[in-house]
Length: 201
Image 1 (cartoon, rainbow, N blue to C red):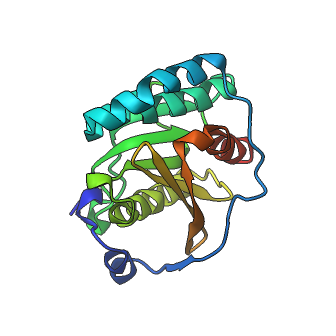
Image 2: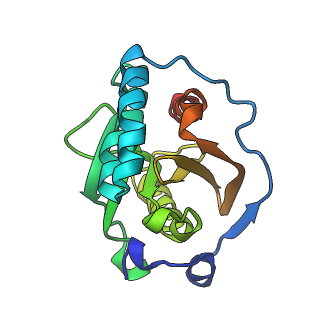
């Protein structure tokens, strides 16, 4: 198995000693941030284009990646962003494979260190279908950091279609699914959640 082979939350619960909860608004108190004029202008041009092309590749390149680059810039490039990287942590537990995006609490852009955020592109525009894969990647990030003795308060997970963004949080052995779902028009809030996480690890 690999990350993408986890299809349901039950798959996660059967393989790992975790609990999954939902129903709370996890980030309602996180402030919005001002985003750059460059991102504002880009999204004005690319969101409708990506949604009309309506492929995962278009949504990834034209919406998701620009948002993550904005986060990287907001934090003065003191974090790192990886796309499509092999993140094999423990094959015996099926924590292996490629991740759509990872963000790390390290400025090292060559070697992945201290992963904090896992971003999964939802397949077929179905956010829920990405939960299990995202959870597996979050558990791998937690294990990776434990092996490296790099403690972080929590791991942030994100499942997105580009137009819709759903956040998850892994703290100790509990995975929480945010009650709220954010639209790309709320980019100030979306970027704010990423920035808040990376500032407090």
